[in-house]
Image (tube, rainbow, N blue to C red; front, side, top):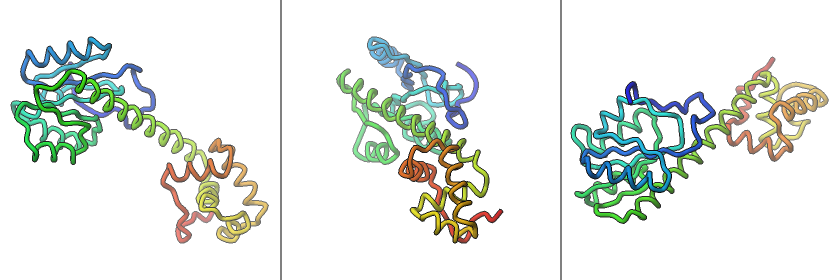
Amino acid sequence: MTGRFESRGQGRHAEASTKAIVFVVEDDISMRRSLANLFQSVGLEVVAFGSAREMLQSTMPDVTSCLVLDVRLPGLSGLDYQTELARLNIHIPIIFITGHGDIPMSVRAMKGGAVDFLSKPFRDQELLDAVVAATERDRKRREAQRTVANLKSLFETLSPREQAVMKLVATGLMNKQVAAELGLAEITVKIYRGHVMKKMRARSLADLIRMSETLGISANHTEQTQV
């Protein structure tokens, strides 16, 4: 694989495949092949690299995935690669494997968000269980991202006034109170509220409130759009 390693989750809502991929970075050829055979034996797709730099130079598909990463690697170490991925805003779940691990290493890895830290030799099932947990974490993260992206798209279809009404309604204010905040007639607020419910595809007020919480929007009374 050639090209540039990048997170394609930004701005894209459909994954290229429904099958999870396990990426492996392991400099020992025999170990790399053994890991690939293990994952393939249970129906997982595997892409393996001999170094972190090699993976960084590759363009990865936008699919549910996880990374099985050796701690000791030539050039960029596994722990430093974890830091680099975080800097690049790439959120692939990581499972560390090592034959030379210690407590400080494992603490650093787990604080960095690693799913697991396994010392060699480990049981095949132990690693497979970690991979299942990691890919499930990634699947849920991607689903959450798609939900937020879809809600943002709907929110952007609202007019500035409708957005202001939604923010206030989501705080629990009644139509009369929203009208007072925005200097509108109550009947006008009811009309805007109806438009908001329809455009956001909200089935109830509770549904609209949950959408607002997911979007992280709130009504700042000093910054309401007055149009």
